[in-house]
Image (cartoon, rainbow, N blue to C red):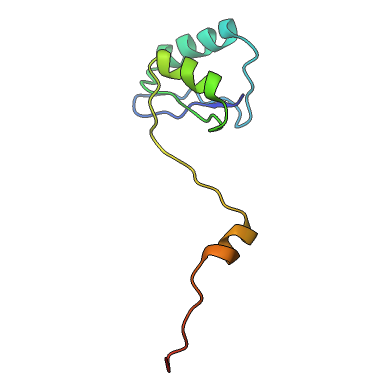
Amino acid sequence: MRKRAQEHGGPGGAEPAPDADFRGLHEFIRFVNCARSVCVWMLELEVSASNERGRSVYQRWGFTPAEITLAATIDELVERLPVPRSPAE
């Protein structure tokens, strides 16, 4: 599980390494308290759409969807994108 903190105002910064991996609730709580102590007022985290259990926990804690990343394989795109018409048609 990767969690990403981004500063949304206030002095200082509380951004962990990009691939910070919090192994337990206590470590995450310490991070939240540290972020608050340097005036970070919002945390964002990335969670896979397939991680329903994690998303449920995070939503219970007050996280709400802020951005959605969509993905498609190149083969899917090639199959589904319209074929361009030539200018003469």
